[in-house]
Image 1: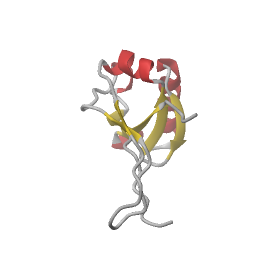
Image 2: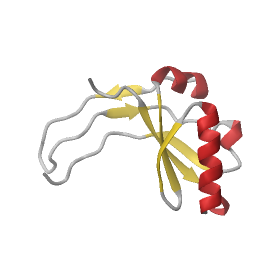
Image 3: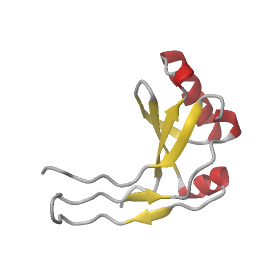
Image 4: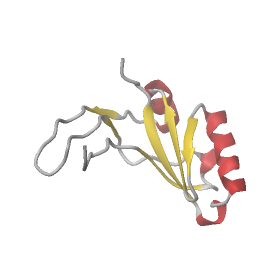
Length: 109
């Protein structure tokens, strides 16, 4: 069964792009019911169940289906799209933007 969770991408504000900033944002994400899954210097990925997504952001994400290979790519994974998301107040000091992660386009096999 496919994973129904919605993948999120968060861009940190420049002054919080540090190990301490990443740790702080991970803690806040967990307190909001979001699960951090990966982090880089400037971004954090997280996931959340669809019901919790709607509760936090006040909008519904739209599921996109996987696509078979076509033209110049080798297919696309499924994912979610959503209207522009408002950064929750608890994260606004640390996070510049947050978005539902769209599916990936496979450029190679």
